[in-house]
Length: 316
Image 1 (tube, rainbow, N blue to C red):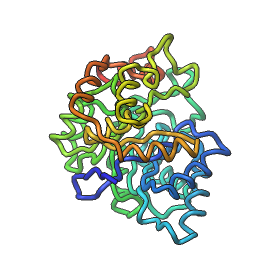
Image 2: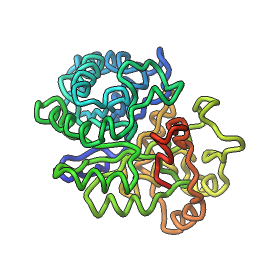
Image 3: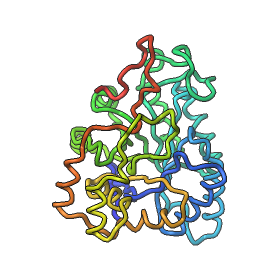
């Protein structure tokens, strides 16, 4: 499998299994099936509320001795309630306990947004947020670097960071994020961000590569476009004797990013990994370029506050 190289020289398997929205009772089997099918990259997060079940899958798989822990890249993410420096390592240790692991390969700051530590669920008022003056990103970042020094994580990075936010963080630390996980797909190319990260040796991971059609109703826009039903993508899939999902996954890989499609369907899990066997032509990429409309499935509006603490999360 193709791998994405980090600045440190470490290599991330390009295709991983995402676990966002994977339902309890299904995610354990999905992870076990994925690992046995050849996946070497599993993407998790505390806020997905399924890490204990993912941990059961890891324990079952790694105890069989056919797949070793060190051969699987495991990513998780720090949730917004644990941005204070004293809360970062305890949150990480909880994730490690849930995942039944001694270390993470990669730990990401999930959002450049801070919540009050005692918040359960998502904010219901502006008072549930902490401003970035109260909890600066650099404070959270330095605590994550401390976790790395302690050997709890091998690599650290961020998620949902714009060029502006990356530049701001980079101006305050010599330890630049090794990874930025963001939404990427043919409706959202983000070429400037891709180029900036490439020039600064920050790897990118693409989330929602298939359009996240299983998001909650509250997260969906009216009449939002479907990637899986797009005629251009369908035509390419037919020419390449591939599924539409395989074309979308391969598009990300050929752009030099990692990609984490989510599925709990055994057949689709295997099909998604098999996308590494197809090849897109320059003509295919030119056709897919025409689809870029800077459309976000995860628009970040749920983090905007009326008191000015947070607005325009992506700096657009």
